[in-house]
Image 1 (cartoon, rainbow, N blue to C red):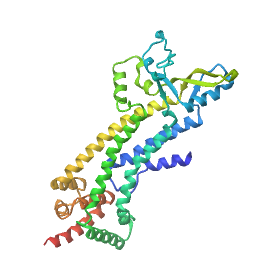
Image 2 (image 1 turned 135 degrees about the vertical axis):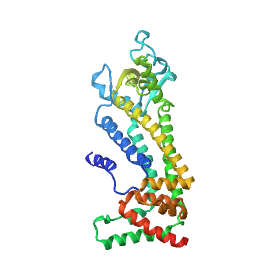
Image 3 (image 1 turned 90 degrees about the vertical axis):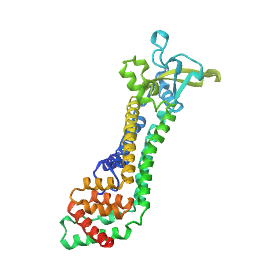
Image 4 (image 1 turned 90 degrees about the horizontal axis):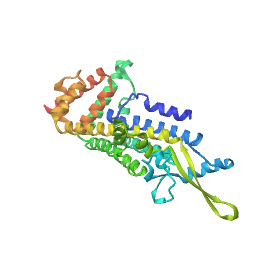
Length: 357
């Protein structure tokens, strides 16, 4: 467990080298952190605690009944979700109905830990793919911090970076395509994961957050709470066994799903997080498309992000390079200290001006 939490801590630690933009990092760092943390919490409660407690008159078989109901799933009665105590329903969805078509079975709680872990893998996958596409170019160019090295070493590092820029200038056209493909994957992955959860929760996850907000805004009765419908805390379970004479006996027991107290909070948080993340990712994609389409915007953005460098120098960068070069220069600048980046751009622009002349 200590090793797992240490790995999660590494996701939050600020890395020296960033090969992508901040909106991209929200997916593979913060979202993955949330999902893995929730996975650990739910799994600990489910497999090391008491996720379910069931009532039965025969106390010596209580553990057997609880394991039976946890494995085979519990249910609520759909037509009794809004019934009151006076109508014969002690809890939402608890009613003596024998019509199995009216039963809503709850099996998801057995799989929550696996579901959260699989989602974490899918949110990390675009970053892993981008690392493969990037190929360690930035790390090889910036493997050492040259600020405190002798001047000779700083010059060697500068010349090495300039030589790489010259060798790849206007040639690596797919660099920007690969990066955008990974960010587009991030955007669509959010909706794929929400659709997956929607299927797990009987087509109710997409509207889950809206219904919860509407419920509490209108101050509706607690029995109509959508969280109790999706994540019931009190459920029924039909326990069947052989009685005297080999006859099959059936008993209906009441089960308390303590694990759903956490599940409802976790998935309500994930609903809001996925919504916010989708909006941020969509805006970031639109912004990139606009900037990549208008050279003057690329020039203005470079000048704003790196004010220490002259506009004329960046103008040469934009005019002589392609979109992949623009992206690489941006990533290079966000990982270098200001004086070193200034020196690299000035020397490289001098070379490019010589070619133009």
